[in-house]
Structures are given as structure tokens and as C-alpha cells.
Length: 624
Image 1 (tube, rainbow, N blue to C red):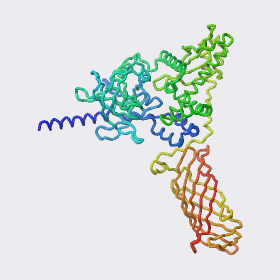
Image 2: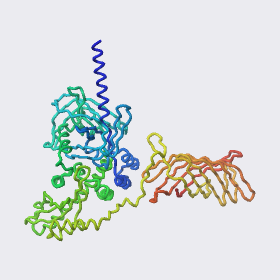
Image 3: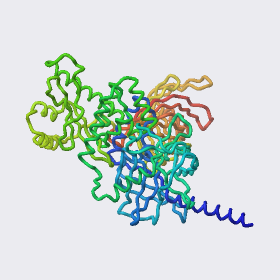
Image 4: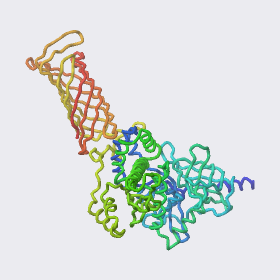
């Protein structure tokens, strides 16, 4: 009896601890600036060029869901509340939404507008602060500071994606290597990495790696960050000691400055320079240097240019980056490709500068350390005679806890030409000239995509869904004119649609033949001087928005009258049915569209239920 009681107590204790863990782990969703969503809308026509089809749905899904991840709440000794997650989960976000589960009611507990308090790209950790310094939690998860050993049982917690939806998951595994060094992920001098076999998937990034301590509660031993795609149960986490060191530095060191301007720009600049100088550039690493400001300002223009000029292999890589990662990463990859091309163009320019001195091209190099002017770099070429020429320009901006490139210019830019032709100017004078030039020439370059209409987006709460497909009719009135061919006789057709719901419209149609033959299935052939048919009925439709086109199959059932011969006042009731397909092509005005419609109709006389005629019709018109 005592054993049963003891087991019951342990079981209830574990359930209580598990509930506490779940209430402290959150789902992380990035919120994007309007300029980001606008840029994503601009690139949709370019995605079709590289084979990213149904780009409307692809972009909308990303805007609504983004690159989601996980995180956990951390409470300091003085009660301040923070959320800890991976930097790569939130690096492109303007703000962040964190959704917890209420411990008392089990209902979602959502906090929006979390901002980045501090971040480290080097160790892939970000600290988020609640809006208005809210303190909704009295305690959070604690860190594990005891010895960790290979073979120790660990637990993973987070919100990985399951069939396109983030779902809670609490997994189990063991430590398979407590101390592994992978320079490609984190520099060994900064931190080692924990390797484990706990269950994680896309969406677990930023969630805690837990261990049961001697007090039988769950403590954080690391943050789940990476997973090896080609090895089973090979998952990697940033260790808790590394996270704590960063927390102490960011939260408690009064001399800590989030940007660490001069030193951090210098380090980033040298890292970028070394990366560009490699024989085979890692674009996955290079795109981390690209700021969202760069993406929103020039991303669509650069993507269009790169797609039109790059090799088929590069085009395929860009497509795979969009499909396998995310649209923002795809844009950054295109910009990175352009940066590499620009950088090597600098080398060509430098060789032209130096040809008067030597014919040995391999003796010419770009300088390893660019000159600094405020937050900008001047790339130099080393000439064999010891002199140097300025041949390029890179500007840095501080974004989401990291210094990143906001522009990467070549010699065609006037401010760079000024640096070369006026090399006797001091750095201070150049910096002043830069500021004046930027203020004077602050007109943004309008990307080619601006001439396109904005892609269709289904307003929240509108439309209807069948399976996984969304249907929505954005137009309330449509009028079209066309021609019908009925047993070798052409007739004019006027068609009007008035929207009732997204899937039903009222249809009014008029058919006119100035002089025609009525030919019946029984072989009779009658000549009519005039023939007008007038109908009204309901149209049942499935309007499906795609990037810039709404496709709409439909079935229309109408009743009306056929005025067979006005000279004899020969009028009789009739029925008309149409099965057709319509394409709405959106105009830049954003509220109008041109459409093309093709349908097959049949007319029946009510008097004797005989087929009047069967006919195909081609229509074109405008919709509002």
C-alpha cells in the first residue's frame, strides 16, 4: 500500500512539474514591418520565372505564419521578465509575439510587441523584453549548473510544426556528446555545443533542452538550435553556461552597450571581407550580413536583375532557397549573389588601376582591413608600388541586435567616384560629403515590380475554404460582351454578373442574332428575321485567387424567353444552362479587373422541352 501511495505521489508530482514546464515554454511568431510585406508582394511575378508556382499562397502563408520557433520565460532575481530564444528565429522581425498556455485555465496566453533587448548572432541567442516592461510571470525556468555527462537523460520542449501547424511537443533523449566543437556553427573560442538525441523538428528552435535536477524539477541545460539533416538523432544545443554568460553581460553589466559600435563593426567588416575573398563563397554565411533595410529597399530590383542574368544553376539554387527556407532568405541569397558579383567587379577595376605598374595580376589584392568612415567601409586595392586606390563602398546598419550591410556600392555610384577623384580629401571631409549627398539624393529607386498590381490577398474573415484551398470573389459587378456560335450561326451576347456571395451571383444575359437559321435536332430548319433571348438566373462559382489572377469555374442556370420572330410576335419561355471558366486579370487600380470567359451553353424550350441549340461562347469584359 505504501508503494502504491509513493508511486501515486511521484506520478502527480511529475504531472505538476510537466504542467509548470509547459506554462513557461512559448510559441514564438515574428511580426514583420509593412515594408517587408510590401516587398514580398513585389517579388511574386519574379518567383513564377524561377518555378515557384502558386506564389500568392506561398507568400501569404509566410506573412501569416512566418518562421515560427519556440522560447521560454526567464525571470531575474529582481523580478524582471524576459523571453529567451534563438537569434535566427527573430532576426528579420520588427516585433515578436509570444504565446504561452495559461497554467490555471489551459487557454492560450498571448503577448505581442515583444522587442529585442539584446542579441548575439555569434552564439545564436536573443533576449526579448515584454512590452511596457510587463511582469506576467513570478518565476521562470532556471538554468542547470551541475555537471553534465554523456548518457544523461534530457527532455526537449517546444512547438514544432505538425501538418503546417505549431503543436506542443515534450520529447526525451540522451546526451550523446556533451562537448562538441563545430566552427561552422559557433567559434570554439566562444562556446562548445551539446549534441543530443532528443526529439526536435522545425519550430523547436529556441526551445529549452531540459534535465531533471536532484530537486526533481526541470532545469535548462541548453537551447535547441540545430539538427543534422543527414544523421538520425543528431541534434545540437547552445549550452546553458554560454547563455548565462551572455545574460549576465547584457542584463547586469552597466558598461554593456547593445551595439558596441566601433569594435563590432570592425570585426564584422573583417569577417565579411574574408568571406568574400574565399575561392568558394558560402552564401548561407554571407546572407547573414544582409540587413532587412537592404532587402526592403533593393531586394525586388536585385532579384529581378539576378534572375534575368544569372546561370541556370544559380537560378535553381535561388528557387530551392525560397522553397526550402523562406522568401526573406531567398531574397537575401539573391542580394548575396549580387554582392559577390560587385565585389569581384571591384577586383577587375583594381586590376585596371594597376596595369601601368605591373602585369602580374596575382600580385594585386584587395586590402584585408577596409578604412573606416563612421559606419561605412572603403575597400582599397593594394598596388605593387605600395600605393592604394579606393574602389568600393559598404555601409553598415545596426538591426535586430547585429551589425549588417545596408548598402554595397560600386564605382558607378557618384559618392564613390567622388572618393576616387578627390582622394586628397580627409576622411572627415568625405564623411561630410557623404551625409550631404545622401540627404540630397534620398529618392528611393523604384523597383520594376511597382508597375504590377498588388497580388490578391483574401481579407480576414472573407471567402470560404474547401479542403486546403481558399475561395474568394473580390468583384461585385462584372459586365462582358462576346460572340456565340450556334449551329454555324454567330450571335452577339451581353452578360452581367451581380455578386450575392463569394459562391453565388445573379446572372443576366441577352443573346441577339440579326438574321439566322434555327436548326433543330429533328432536321427542321427555320429562317428568323430576328432572334433575341433574355435570361435571368443564378450562377454557382468557385473563385480562387492566384497571384494576379482569379480563376473561376462556374455553373449558371437561367430562365427567360426567346423572341423568335418579332414580325409574328412569336415568343416562348425557355431555359438556359452554362458551364464555363473565367479568368479575372487584376489591374493596377487594385479594384478593377479585366476578364476572359469561355463557356458551353444549352437552351431548352419549356413548351415542348426540345433543345433550341447548343453553343460555345467567348466573352471579354471588365469587373469592379
